Image (cartoon, rainbow, N blue to C red; front, side):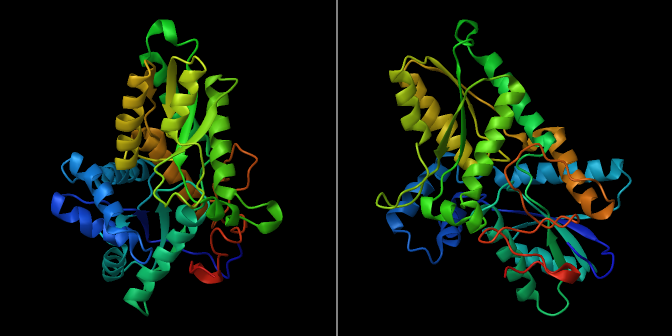
Length: 359
């Protein structure tokens, strides 16, 4: 990236998805999530039952607040005076309100950490749209907001997942560990959306390739010679192809092949939010039990101290010239000071002077 002049950042904004914090908030939240997409009411009611199973409370806000406190402590330990704000796309605190508060506090320019490590529309471009929408809602004088880069292959993320896999493997019955299958999961998206993500000359499929690369790196770090990558949380109509196979279907296939133990790692997720808890800790674990299969799910990295260090390291790339660290060979994009452009169809090309509106 080229800058006309050095940019001073006044704050960090942690930008996430959001979730309901009571039964009365579930349907309004889901309506926010699906607005303009023509999702049938019966589908919303089906998903609402997942939230109501847990009292109508998503764990995502509390988990993000824990991450924020860890980042604040890490920043303080590094001697960096950078206030940390929290905003969401779909539920309170809404990013529009947070940006208004930042402006009232005198923030002129801030870095944005998204709770998604990936490229693609939902993982990257939509965060740029959130930023642009929040700035437009405030109007002239809104803080300049610069989204941090994709971090799917950052060494600290891979190390945290690798240790979580080791811990999950240790929870399996001793006699089944040697034959356990390592299965990675990430959120499914329509195949058309995956194909469109990334530079056309590179064949698209940036999201699925990044997920596969992160899974490969994690498996290698733990010493697994082989592993599977499957998908979860599909929400589209059956007539539209989505990334497959689904985790539950895959468990049935593994059982038919004689596999009697699995370690499932939700490599596509930063935190144990509701889709991880419902799809894996309920549906997948229940299916494994029906199949007589030992099941252990690896933890997500958000609660690992290395995750806060990762965030601070990404900040350091902008404010202290820290060299970006990457383990993988699949492209990663974002607003890095070393000039890596964003991918066409993924996230916006960064404009000079700190703007981050999608092109």
